[in-house]
Amino acid sequence: MLRKGGGSYIHDFLSNDTYKPRRKAGRTNGLTCTYVGVFSVLAFLTWYARSAKKLHVVPMPRVPAGSLTKKEFFEQYGDQAVIIEGGLRQHPAIGLGLEGLRDLCGDATVETYVFDPKSDEWGGHVDQKLLKFDEYIDEYVLNETNLEKRYFPGGLVGMPIVCPVLEILTPVLSYFTVGYRVVSHEPEFGSDGKSHQLVSHQPELFVGPGGTKTEIHMDRYPGTFWMAVYFGKKTFRTISYEDSIKYMPYYNNDGNARWEKETYSVTTGQKEKRPLAIWNPDLETFPELAKVTIWEGTVNAGDWLYLPPATLHGVYNPEPFWALTSMDIYPPLFDKFIDVCVDTNFMGKCSDIILDIGQNKCNPKSLSREDLKKCLRDSPYVQSIQKQYDDEQQDQLDKFLHEMADYDSFESWCDAICARTKKDKNGCQACDNALKVKSSRISLH
Image (cartoon, rainbow, N blue to C red):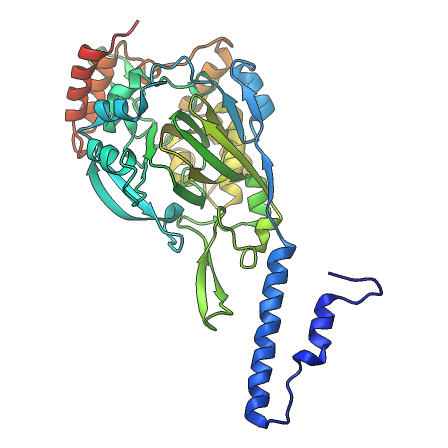
């Protein structure tokens, strides 16, 4: 705003007699003019502050499917948000659509939410409502006249419980078939005498109508994140951990609520709390948003997205969609995950995850960074996963969850999930229905 000669528009605004209060009309009028002048200055400065800053948004890299081996992928993109185009084309779920998803998963009960821009809840999601899945799809996703943008954003109840039959339609991407599974890696021992790695809470199923969104947040499980989009599209805005820890170190605690600041409102003259937003950013309250790089990309049906550990991310859904996502820790990102946890004083579920993968022998808060890494690497579980990754063939294909858990069939895996999750509201009925659907509609080759 500087002009030739060293002056500025702000200087002119403050020094111009037009804006100085006149005392001829007496003290009251003088004070009134003073207040008007002050608020005019504040309004101008607010406008100037907003116009002087803007987000630095750059497009995410996009990589064609099949162009990189697993190890090449992690070497080139392990620290980068990236979209793999066409990486799901071989999956049976492509083309299933929302009606097909409804028919497969209709008996499940799911938690749905709406977005509130003023909420300090995770992602801005409020007003939880339990709905039958088929009712949710028909009334809130396919029904274009329903203006209530209700969103099913996964949760701790994963696809193996909500809709286990999807297991044989949505194999795990080859890049992510070997990793340290988040939350309870304790194996199940089946009737076959084998040790099986069962995880019932991942992948998570995300479904919603167009116009829904999740505001920027840090996951409580700050491991590696991938999302496979099978229908519709999802637009992401992300901030790397390196940028966020430097300019936005908000998440160095155990909570995962949406970050907010207390600010003074020129309009009301009162203090108010404003939450962090990435889709309608308030750069006056959060000027640090102008200092970081925002990586933006749209994941179309058939594509998948990868985010490194502890990446801040917000999501806008321009049209109806469904997708699957998972968060685990993969051998190439093992050190980074531990560094994130140590640097942030073990935010979120860091301590629980570390205790879990170290088989409760590595106390994260009593060991130095390097001693913690050594203790974990000495764990039989960590060593077995690392060896599996090192020995793996580069042309490995995507795998079904039951294969990853070393079950011979979908049926035996589904029975084991049922036995583990009998207390869940969806219970074993989902597996029973899945077996009926599989036998009547789906043939595996």
